Image 1 (cartoon, rainbow, N blue to C red):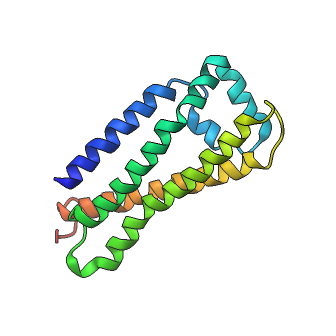
Image 2: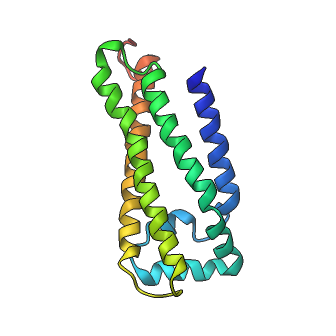
Image 3: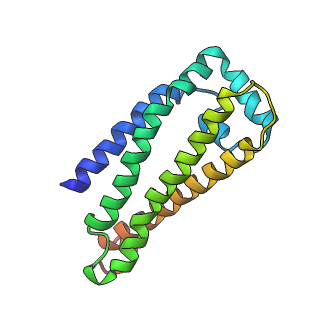
Length: 164
């Protein structure tokens, strides 16, 4: 039941964030992964004043979202039945991935807020540092999703191995 509630919470939170900034072109993911100041500021310029305002306004919801997905990862890994009791070490490693991703997300958000508070278009070391934090965050999310998906496939006998 706890896993189901955590899943619903992360889905609702993700949909809400998507409604806030999801229709921006280039996408927010492109912005997050922009290592170059020209590319970064170019995306924000392309969004216009309304897009910039929506982006600035999304940070409160994003902070709540990163707490929700960190908790979701912990709950799925420790209470989702993905690991037998003998594999507590593996369960603990999976449980740490999304909370660690959330820490990189916090750093990314702080760097983004710093950039948005400064002069528009200014070159800054915060841009590639923010993109690095974002890359690490998304990498950890991908590893979590792949590992949890693999464990689910094994659990239900979909990966060609007997379920545990």
